[in-house]
Length: 244
Image (cartoon, rainbow, N blue to C red):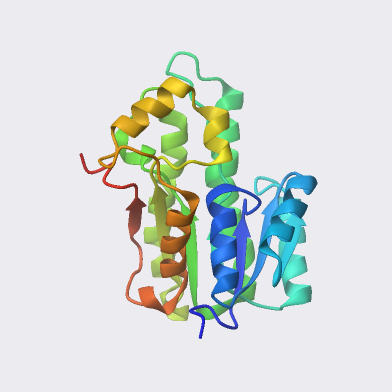
């Protein structure tokens, strides 16, 4: 029997990378999954690659109307949510002195504001005993030059988890943050230079990037009853990157 048999999961940003790998794993373990993505062609390809028990809903997690459309679709098709993986996020490097209002608003608008309203809008559909997972980042505890705004937008999610688990304890809904380290994803290709990737790899004890499937395994743990006594943690999945 799959660890998520009969469960309904929603994964934002699920059309590529870690979130797509997690969607595949959730379906393999018995869940029905709704995924979102901003680009329809990429979303269609992701749905095709998952193959079954999946609905793709085009939308931007920073856009509240798109979030409403997502959860209207979930309500119409399944009527409930057991697992929410708020994974949509992005960050670009700009050092202090060059940060613009647009750069700040884009990072906090998607990573922080978008995550908050994704969770809030999902709550009316949530089954008691469900699991909320937010994608953080080890950048929030490392202090890498140029990533100050991105790191701060992700650090806020740890604070959300602490507050929300207390607010949701009457419904036994768990709230945790999954903090990936450097992972080989299409987004990483967009935001990191070759030199930056080599630098990050040099700081990982095993000497190579993590893979999306390694994040998916931990997402499954946090989504399933295997983590029934895990609540309010920030679980860094980074091969020891943040520990040394």
